Amino acid sequence: MNEILAGGHMNVVERAGDTVLRNGGPWTPTVHRYLDYLALAGVDWVPSPRGIEGERERLSFMEGEVPIYPLPGWVWQEQVLQDGARYLRQLHDASIGFALDDAVWQSRSKVPAEVICHNDFSPHNLVFQNGELIGAIDFDMCSPGPRLWDIAYFATRAVPLTAVTPENAPGMDQARHRVRLILEAYGSETSWNDVLRLAIIRLHDLAVLSREKAVELNKPELSLHAEDYLRDAEFLGTIRD
Image (cartoon, rainbow, N blue to C red; front, side, top):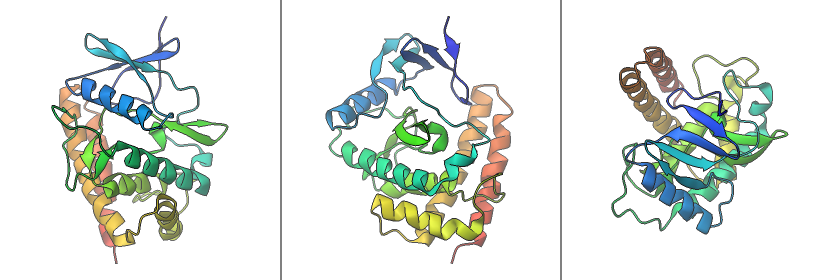
């Protein structure tokens, strides 16, 4: 019997042996082609496509712990920020050269289309073993965009940059330092203000997506996330230089 995996709000994920089954869509062949491309580019810490079965996709299962909300205290360690940023840089660099002919994406492309963005690179989509980052999952929302789009969202979730600090998480008095750790580990000269600017835009984008998915999936509770995203966006606007 397949095991339903915890944590999915917008998809149903089942484990079947050493594979997982997820709902797919018109974008799935592009995402599978992209995952194969990453493997050719030397990224061996992402799921491997195993096929498309009707409206479901099959991917390799990545053994490890994927944190779910409320996030455990160890997720807030500075090493997670730095390792996450390095993994994100490797992911972005490996995407350069991916052919966009006939590509179909679930998320809109953004400018400048420097790399293929994960679009949800955050602790709840990272895989850990004994607290050490070993991979990333959930690439179904990926699409072309600027590097900063992913960097800023990772900072939003992992610093965290939120109006209400989660339990056991570092306070906003450490936010600038923690954002700097991400930027230095990634190798970006982006400023604090630029990170906040993109984070605010990304949060508004997520609010729209949450409301759309609430209707599409008949899950009214998803619209509650939209209010949280907008609250966080408003807060970040007050702390910009």
